[in-house]
Length: 431
Image (cartoon, rainbow, N blue to C red; front, side):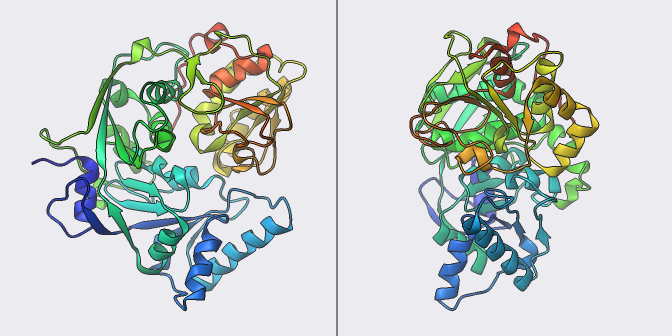
């Protein structure tokens, strides 16, 4: 019986010639990604048990990103804990404040994580890295502690959902709209503990930024991870980071691999999509309801990349954010912030009346730098719109592409981005 990409990676990392869904395996992990919120809890577990060690300081990447710069004394202490641990253990790959940004986007750009490898982190959106053809997933603090200590994690081999997308995306329709449409179709638990494997000519034409958006939101459908097979686009992306094919392993699903579910989707029929409160699967066509907004947020590990910012700039250029709307733009990393500045994007944002913030996860999970108050209505390019996710429980959060967020910010209510710039595709970002 054939195996899927995910099954082949897990087999290779557990010493088996073959694994099957449901099988329990002890899997070696090539990388552990740490940030300042979940890692300290894992470290305390190890310290309390006299197991205070790191399996390999060269295989850990540490990026403070959730509450930086520190918003209060508690946040400062958590940052200090991560930093002191990094220094004590000699962890080389530390992307400090001012040198990093949002951990998942920082990591994808380093060239450290490679196709065919495994990655775990105490953050649910670790599945982001699956766009590189690797097995990447979030784990709880206990499993994170085990990975830090031993470089191994227990997994139940997941089944796989095949998502086959064919055809051309319409102008103004982006990968974010595509993944929101898939989640709308299958439901917020439609991929529960499944690998979401993306295939089809639409995916083959999609750049890496778009693919990262797709795999990033696997968890919003209950998925264990998302994954895209390695192709020339992946190889070019890795080559731009000094990584050649002889440094990684490419896996492809066998023709007779078994899938729990197969989803077929015509990309040409996908429209700009907005997920209404309070669940990512509550998707509707953008602009069908004229819903006034108070906040517009562009950023997060899902959609804070340079291509996303270009989409926003195309719509904001020569226009103004509507009165009564607070718009915040957060480049996902320091490098993206710098590139956006060099391209003149930040000036466009400021001229339009938007605020540009430091790269962090802050507003996305309601920690700082844009927390919503009672009754606020926000359209966001992030990944979750649960009750209280971005602040007060009475706030309303609508999820959309950066282009839809920008169009809505200008209009003052949720709008279809095609009314502002019908040529913007949102898939033409540079590596």
